[in-house]
Length: 329
Image (cartoon, rainbow, N blue to C red):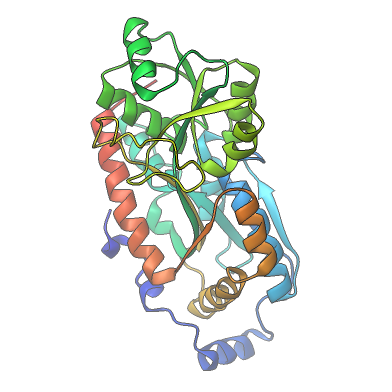
């Protein structure tokens, strides 16, 4: 994937008032004139959901229309993403996606299946956060370090169950990237999203999970989970005492869970411009900032052109990782 494969209109769009006014007049009214929906391809409780709800509330205040979050879980986000790709390109159906948006079409190729969507069916609007992934285990687990975990996994190939948000979703790719680098084999247990996977980790049904800091913080602080490692290039601000995989001797293990807002690619440029303008305001909204900080996932805002470049670069790296990992059942 490259920046050239992304919609050209996105890279050129700008929130100019005059073009929007002319378009609105031609349409018989200003956008938006009715309720909007932000689709999340995962159940409540995961990174995309935690990002979408404060964003929806902030957009409601700015656009003065209801903004509803709709969870359409399944297929590591593929069901929700495919729904938005096929939705009318009118600005009323948006997608809060994770980095798996770039991975799913590539993973389907490994199995000879048709992709549920292609990345060029989406126009990036704004990046809202980006967190390094964390390796979490139950607090009563025997492992105190990445090295402990690797030693045990090598002694018991395929015995340690770990959860994910679905095959080739963000949590799955992160763990398989680590397993491949460490030369270990784990037992993959897919769930419909990060929320159910965390519930399974807390109950002891699985023994490991890659997840964003924001979804782990309360459980670590409550003494129910322990964090062993960080997939970031640098240590996570929420867990400054947790080493990175690079520090542990795995320099190629790097993965981030980010959340970003997208629209269908054919959305008119003036509507994209209005959404970009609204997101600039939303990402300065005091309530949104408090919600993100409370969740342990500080905002990281990028407007559409910068987000398009970020998406292209991150996607290319993740597609390469999937190709190296190959078919994993």
